[in-house]
Length: 548
Image 1 (tube, one colour):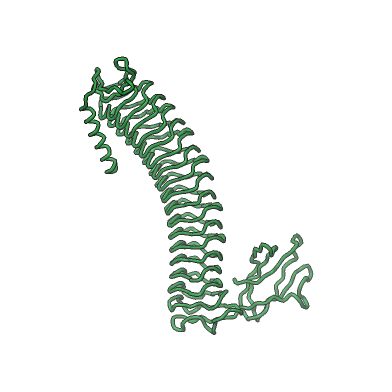
Image 2 (cartoon, helix red, strand yellow):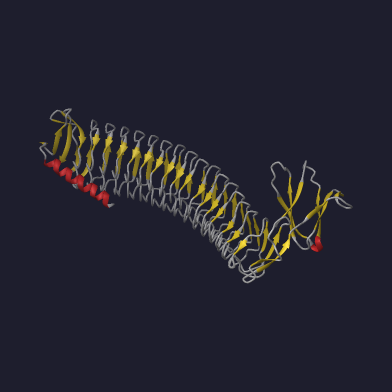
């Protein structure tokens, strides 16, 4: 219990004692007040306990309300019958009745206050009839024996901590009608195994199902719009969750530490995702993000050690700090054109990742983004990047080929630090500025294009490293003897600088070009004769030459 909650309860108890001290009528076991409409509010109970039937009227006047603290701490009470006609049950009315085992709230009740049954630790059965419109804050807090609850369709809201610490609850039914599940409503209901959230629910509050560790399945019907922070935090048994297309936002750490969750699909309706939403979901192997998602938050999938592949749609513009940090099984990342920023440490420690292509839309890359990606052999940096950040590929010992986009003007300190050497760098633009610590090792090789500037015979500062440079200038020859269509083959010659590597690519539609690599060749002695069978089912076929 929080300090604020404790103080709230203390003031209500004091208020209740003051009310009891005020003049009130007494009839047998009850004290009561007569309301302005000549109905009765019961304010206290002085009977022997056991099974109690609250009267429908006292002295001919109808009982319509059970007042604040009316049965507060009556530990002798084991069962209570609330008659039809009662319309409200006020704050703390039965709080602390630790031996109360069952309660039926009739349909005439429309208003239930806060903490009404809190601390009723023996309460095993609570029947809430259709007619009740809200369940108040802390109403069944610490009802640790409560096993089953049906929330009828008349209820619109379930209050903060309404069923907090109901550890024995195994069955929860929410009928269509509820629109709001408030913060911590089912916090630590460790007996729950599954839950269906009806489509009438607009918002699932912060920590609503926090630490429901035995819950294996969550079904959200279409209509749910908001999943707030920590909503399903540490639901370690959760294996399946369906997020409907109506959801627009998922708050921070909403599914954090759901270690048994294996697969998740984020619908395109989601425009806002908080930080660490799926962090430490150690069993998560598959993530699908549909087009429409605009960002991947900080620490989003951090330490998802079973995640093997991820496709980031073109609608995503930013990938947050540490988003995929230590995803040690991640082997494939596809970033579609649209991402503009990749923040610090986004893929740090993804030591199974073998290659990465950064699309041309990316203009900003943080520090250590691909640091300690031990298995990475190939990286392609898009044409929108201007600066290769600090330690961006540091400690990537397997890195052998890097394509550097045409806009890069600077390579920051330690960008490729502790990459032991043997790396081939393919530059699309002019020679960038470089720091003495940008590279480590003396076995690198640089290729540059004919129309670019600033290149000499070597690249580097001449002290820490000085990589030889090679002009990359392959040309395609299709005319001449033995070239063109020959014996059902299409043949062309690739010529120019000796021993440069070249990728032969193919495309079938220049209006919407998608170039597919066919073969990587080396211009031994300055040429290579390429041939391919004619493609009978293709109306057009275009060839190109590209960097490896």
